[in-house]
Each structure stands twice: as structure tokens, then as C-alpha cells.
Length: 337
Length: 254
Image (tube, rainbow over all chains, first blue to last red):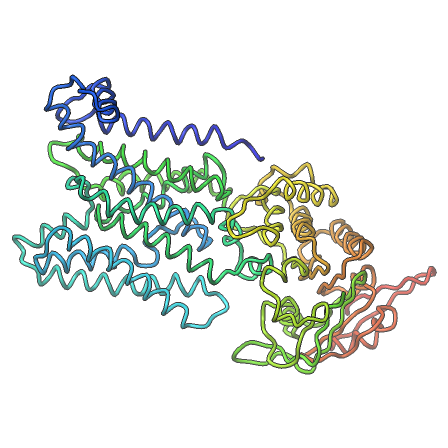
């Protein structure tokens, strides 16, 4: 094996552990590390924890679900970003390249516009993301070209712009006092509302999509080569591309449906992971998942605690992501060009 | 084992590039494909690799129609060495060569110890074992060409098809790559390569195939096909031939 993947993997795990610890301990209601350990142990063993009930509630009901949601959404966005960057042979690609986010956004604002319940809004967002990507894929495949990847990306951009116009229209028509703030809040991304009931619809698709991508991770190396070269190496690129796009879209849509639009994670984390363990997807993908979970946990903790009001996640990820990415561009250029 | 195209009409969905082409490549021989830019060399190469369906005619590989092979089966017989590229991601040279093993595994498999051994042997054969852990993006053009050759060999193919293997290489590496092409034939592989330099065909190939405007102008042993008159017809340009006292000859353009 090339330079061992272990140190990089340990760093990623360290970030995840740090993210988990901060997310549980830091906040308006301070919690001790021992309390978390006791509560979790009591849950596992069935013994009483001996921790005050209020603390137990904070750990299990308030922070617990949010921690799990942040870890899953972060991992999901990172895995999807890694997969799409490989598939589109472009390190500037993020999980919403094929319109998953803009589709989800339109679905969600429509749900809010029609005053639907929280779950219906999430369902609309999820479906919106899926439908947008399927539409992009079908349109892109219908256009015959020697460079199907480029056509797909351009179709994604065009359809994304159209969906953006749709979002603008719905916002314009929405009630400015009730609906518009809810839409804005959703479009900026937040885990503040993540509860236990959100975890199942998030976990199912994320686990399924991630599992498929992990299984295919060695083939994804070849998928990052030019189309004809991959085929000449014996890879049926068409079906494999469908499988990767489907899995990554599933994962992205579920995340967006739960947390709203959180940009930059799927773009920045794959780069970080690549700098830790190199570009081989076999080790990159698991590392990105772990690192993504830790990364979003840290950012979400910051979003909760940095100011007296919650800062929307999408704003924080952009504020942190942009300068970071510029720095990354300067540092790592040579490794992709 | 023979790779053979008969009566091929080649091209893309919107245009035909060449007609009536017959090509035959046997194991252990080297065939050089020459012709001016836009004459159909690359299209013919892609068609013979099964990456582009012919408009008419058929290609047989070991008596079986090439279109009946699965992508994976084909890759175990037919290896492709593309023009040297840099690539998007900084895979190690070893990973690049291991990608040649993909057709020997199943959908979800990771490279086995056997795959690693074959990749190591391929790296060794081309003298680049010391580069195994270097990023492919950070080695020289000549080294990249050798890495792609090693990847092709890792496929354990019967035929190796190379697209302008000497383009963009320095003089020394051109010689080295041509030597490796001869060595591939010596170890029983059938080799097809395109080139812009008739001297490379003279040096490395047994037979030459001259293609202009999608039509075969001549085909046969390099000594008889590569003459001054033929090359002037092929390129529509003056050519000078130098003949050494040893009997070896070379061509100069202009």
C-alpha cells in the first residue's frame, strides 16, 4: 500500500470524536463528559444513570438527536460530494451539481407555501431533489454527445437555474409575514428542529446510499478516468454511473430534506479527506464520511453557541468554507492538475 | 488469436469517417497505423477497440464478433493505451496500474494479493517499480507512458492498442517506448499503434497501414509499404529518404 491510510484515518476519527464531545458538552446548558457517559451507559445497560433528569433530557432529547442528525448529514454530504467529484472528474463539484438542492428547495418552499406539515415539507423536499436529478439525467442522456459528463453538468446548471426561478416565484407569492421567514430559514439550513422522529427518514436513505457507494468505491477510481478509458478497462460506465448518481442523490436529498440547504460541506470535506489519505476512493470515501460527520458537528455546535441567536448553518458553512477553499486552492493545486 | 475488421464503415452518428476498411492483427506482430490528421486513425482505433460501433462491416476477435463480448470480457483480451494525459486526481502509479485489474474482479471486489503481484510485475517489467508510490501527476511524460503501458499489461491482454504512444515524449523516451512495443510483440502480444512518424513505424512495426481520408492507401510489411512515393501520396507533401550504408533507411519531411 502507498503511504499508510491509518494516520489520516485517525485524524478523521479524532475530528469526529472531538465533534461529538463538543456537540454534547457545549451549549447554554453545560453538561459534563461524565454525565454523557453515565446516561449513555444507563441507556445501554438499563441501570439508572444517577444523573439529574434535566441533564438526561438535554443529552437524550435535545442534543442527542441533533448530534446524530448533524453527524449523518455531514457524512452524507461529504460522501455524495466525494462521489460526484470523482464521477465528474472535477474537484469543484459539490453534491448539488445535478440539481438535488435546487429541486429540494423548490419542493420545500412549495410545501411551506401550501402550509403543509413538517413531514410533508420534508417529503416534498426529498421528492423535489430526486425528481430534479432524474430530470437532469434523462435530459442529459437524451442529448447525444461524445462527452456525456459535460452535457450532464451543463444540464444540471440549466435545470438548477430554472428551479431557482421557481423558488423565487414561490417566495414572491408567499405570505411575507408567516411563510417567507419559514422559507428563508429553511433555505439557509438548520438542524435546530431535528428531533428523534427525523432520524429514521434520514438514516434509511443515507445508510442505503452510503452502503452502495462504499461497495463501489474501488470502481469509482476508474470512473474518474475519461469515459472511453474506463470502458476499455472493462467497466460498463453507463449502468455504474446511474448507480452512483442514484446513491449519491438519495443521500443528498435525505440530508437536504432534514437540514435544509447546507452548502460547502460536500465540497470542502472531500478535499480535506483527500489531503489526509490521498485520492484512492477505496480509502477516501470512508475517511470523507467520518470527517464530514465531525466537521458538521463542529460547525453545528458553533451555530448553536457562537451568538445569542442560532446562526443558520448554510451561512456558517459558507463563511468558513469560502476562505478555507481559497486556501486549499493555493495549497493543493498540484495534486489535481 | 486474431483481431480482424472486415468491410468496416466507421464514423460517428452524424458523419462517416472511413469506408471499406479491412484490418487484421495477429498475436506477436506489430501493426503501425499512419496517416494525416483527420484521416480516420483515431476513429479506426476506437472502432477496433469496441468503443465505437462500426456503421457497417464486422470485427471479430478470436472468431467471435467483438460486439458479442461484454465490456469486461473485451478488456481481458484487448488493452488500450490512450495518449498520455495527466488525470484529475493524484493517484499513485501503483493505483493506476492496479486499475488494469478491474476486468478481472467482480463489481464490488478490491484488488487482491494476486492483483497486487501482477501490478508489481508490470511495473517491474517497464523499470518503474521505484515510482510505485509516487503520484501519477508528478512523474514525467515518459514515465506516465510507461505507467499506462504497465496498466495495459496488468489487464493480461492478447492485444494492446496504443494511440500515438510516442507523441509528446522526448527523443530518448520515444526510443524506449518503441523498444517496449517490440518487447510486447516478442512476448506474444499483438500490438497496434498510431504514429505521425514513419521512422517509428520502421523501427517498431512489422507491418504498416496507411490511411488517408478514411481510405486505405496501402498495407503491408514496413519495408515495402513505407517508401518515399507512398509517403508523399499519403501526406501530400514532399519527403526525403536517407539510406545508410547498413541498409537502414529513414525519412525526413520537407
